[in-house]
Image (tube, rainbow, N blue to C red; front, side, top):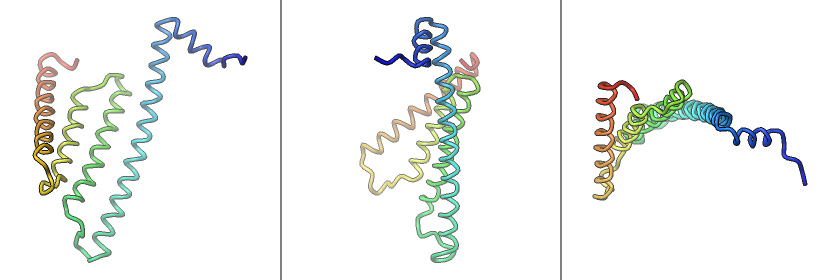
Length: 157
């Protein structure tokens, strides 16, 4: 039988004491948040490079000066990057305060819904898809209004 490694002994010892265990969990949360932030930065940088390559091909290659794709698809690419930036902002806000900021999460969700509405192909949409999109939009807008009013009245929770 092998002996447990020193790290596992520390984890087991920390699990026995609430303060030590919570400190250990906080370290893990911070490491994971930092790793996710770095991964999101990489995704954003690759997306921006991809957008520039796409725009240069569309503007300068075939047929010159005209988008072969619809302008809506180009807006979708821009909004993808904007949503990724909002997610990165959520991660960095968490790293700063170690609190999930509900207002910021709702704004990110509203941006994602706006992107979906902008690129949505209404010719192929079913009634249930439109209802779902409408319900999500109204729910998020109402949630944002409630959180905003609560923050104005009582301060951020």
